[in-house]
Amino acid sequence: MRSCTFIGDLDDGERLARRARFESVARAYDEVRPSYPAALFDDLFASLELEPGVRVLEIGAGTGIATRELLRRGLEVVALEPGRDLIEVARERSAGCDRVEFVPTAFEEWSTDERFRAIVAAQSLHWVEPGHLNRLPGMLRPEGAVAAMWNVHDPECPYRRLTQPAYRRIFGQSPTPSLDQMVDGLTRWLRVGGCFAGVEVRRHPWTTRYTTDQVLALIGTFSDHIALDPDQRRALHAGIRAELAKVGDSTEYWRVAVLALACGARAAGPHRTPSD
Image 1: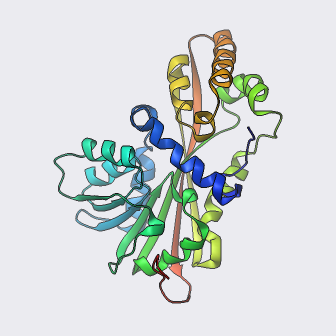
Image 2: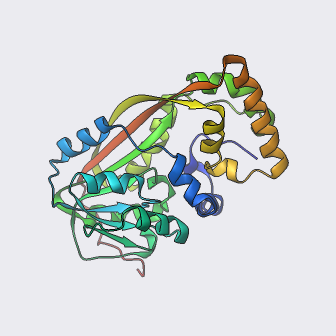
């Protein structure tokens, strides 16, 4: 089991294998994964001047965590998600809303003649095959933009500092990337191929307090943790419990909600479809 500064640095086979792992934890993912702070959505809507009724495309909707907030704020959403179990949860959670269309497919396999005011990717853009990212500008209206968002853990947060010994016993002594390195690694996904004239990155720090049981449920939905064999998982959880017991039954988990806005599409080749 190896650690990686950025998921996009993995080879295509390993990255796609990780992407598929979330299917096995779909309901747990929806229950324990956080949404994003209201400040990030406020920033998104103000920056792109999004108003109720605007139609947007969402790539990799997962269980619909971000989708539901977009709907709550009045948008119409075309949500792509290839995972059968993930999209089932998303549909259940948005049942009764007629402003969302869940499409059971990956972005790489989907094409459209429609042009959107915004393309949103929440915790998902780094799973897209790089060769398809140059299709994004062709799916935007002239005033449109891609809005990619991620929750990035702060490596200096109490939870990370306390549990490093347990992690190193399982994942080895790989250097922990800094927050800046992680943010740069994710947002450079928007710079692949030079499709956009500019990428603007905003950060919204926020904090959650978790009990030990809650944090173990959370990390159980991480792609590298899902791949652990049962003995490794038990050892990691036992180590985390032992470290967190030193400070009580709960710990702070610091995150930075990252919003990356890419606009001003550069002149490029013809709009590709998956069959090209």
